Length: 330
Image (cartoon, rainbow, N blue to C red; front, side, top):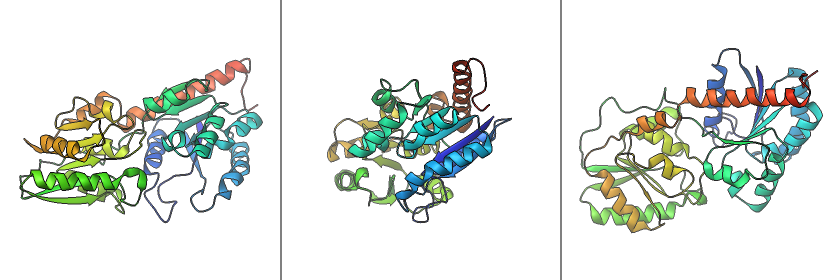
């Protein structure tokens, strides 16, 4: 099976943020590891110039005709603006993955995303909330979260010994307004008044993948205060490293953390309540049973890759049925 992946975020292609889209790159690599599967990638450089989105239609059409693909898989709704036209011109089944801000961001981005997914074969949402947003306007929708690279992210060889400092991780750059660093900072101010230990904050910003892993394995907790998320990778990577997590109720976090030892979700966006939750998860040890939760819910790389491959096969079969059993590429 030959797959063409089209994305505006792919590790190493954005000089300003080299790790952007690493989860897409890792997903592509996992799918390539499935026997008999070839995946090629077209990166739409929309972060450098918006005109790249318009020009991408011609690039994708040329690549689709040259490569004779079985499925075209778009990542992100804005990238997928061309999907209806590509589907109509080439007849190749189209899958689109929506990641969160494409259906919960600005009005124009939501409009583009909702237009695009109306005409594709399968729409993948990375969370239940995304699926709920689009399931009434698409032909077929399914929830498949982005996977955790469990070969890299794993619990430390042994849980760190107690120390005088408590390291609390902010899972992004403080400069991103939707991540609400102000709430994170206010929470740590309350936390400092509640505990005797020195509180050290660290940010997942400007680190390579190994650096992120080292940070998560050595920290004491993660605090997520985002205003919106889909299925946040940072939470899943923290769970893979057995790191305690406290988060506001955003995206699919409640399902990820519910029932996981030394993790908690706070319904209100209240700094004092978040600080109290941190005190609770920090009491009694460092390591959680996060890795077991990820495996239970199918978040591991091989699990997610196989589910997406199953979607590809289903879309090809559906397209063949619509064509009366013939090939879409003939």
